[in-house]
Length: 295
Image 1: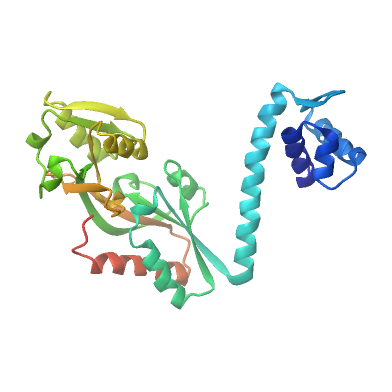
Image 2: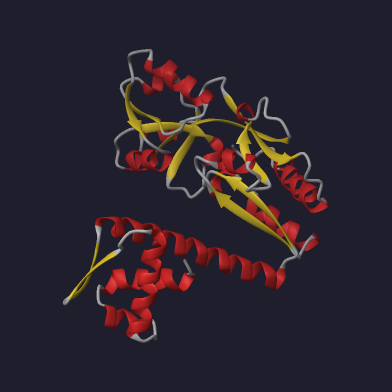
């Protein structure tokens, strides 16, 4: 299956008309129809049903074209990334993290690093759930993680970065937003958003609060949904400080508990590039120098 055949198939699924699709792809209709037939012969099932009125997607074809469209977009991005890389860079360092906010100083680290290594590209990859799997498959060079996630994993080096505490997230007009420290008693009678892939330390705090029987709770599938619910006045939530984007949209108030999150960077032990070591040191220094920064 060629990229040309993929493009033809996607275009025909859009127009459902062979003549119009061929015209849009700047080829003759016989050539266009032949390429569609070759594609269907290769995959072993009909993507389109032909009729005098044009074409219609078969049920299998509809599913197939949906997959093709996503694959084509991924391929386009890969080509664009390759073009960018080959034009300016000799090497690249990819870093996986769940959201941009997780490493507040990442943009500053990239700026500083570029002065020392202008021909090495830093490529952030945002993978909310599968970052660890991708890192272990050598799909990324650096992984932002919690220290608890890295225990007993062979072949990796763990670089401790900072400790993050638990914060309460509330609307800025919430009475709790005026507090300097929120306690368990402050949440009595309130609704707490829980779940959403919470780290182990945060789940422990949530369970302890719910066990009091004095706090209602509401399950939320992910952090973005939780924040939407907080904004809609459906409740408040607890979160690691490293997720604070400092946009000012919400109030982030320290919560009174002993639990913290040890945030680390993981690299592969056999990756001894001087550029990688330099980038890790840059991030370490930024966090070490920002001891007063709330995380």
